[in-house]
Length: 229
Image (tube, rainbow, N blue to C red; front, side, top):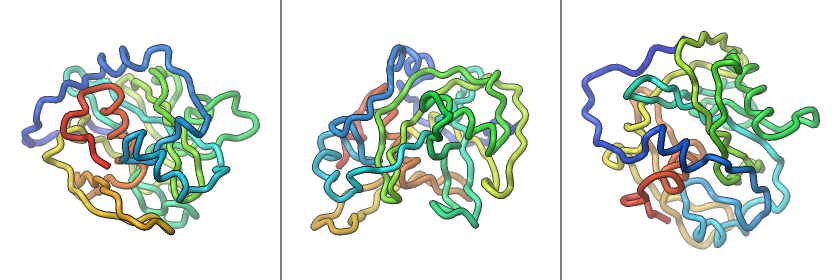
């Protein structure tokens, strides 16, 4: 089991609780049509402007967005990808990967990948719902599967896939004062976009992972302070 986050860090209160996430995503279903694709870290409107810089036919993939239900202090379970992987080596990520032919849906793919990568037993997982598909520069269309994780689980990490696993408080990743803005230009783009990094101890949550967390807040909570891009 991963120990829950500890420390004396003061976190700003966030309106986005696990209960609110469950209420907002209840009954949601995956939507794969292009008009609903998001670019990580951007609003839906801005994403539609940027899609021309991304592959037109990306490979379907799914990730598990695991929110551990520690009483009063939920956390997000994250991995650091192995250095030898072909895509996104060494980056902070959610468990996940390509959707295979045997997977009946994105949730099944995300649960399978989480079990393969970190040994997360599906009996501890309750799927809450889905965020919109996100397209990433490596050529994938990723369906984020948001789930509540019951504490008490034990993990067995596949060291070829994952270097380490850690938890970060949900309130921390949603605290805008913890975010670091940077400018980025997608290949072929004429203008830069604003992205967010979320430093946490020795880790830096950035790219698609940080972008999906911002989408979670935009859809489920208050977007004040995060209407960027």
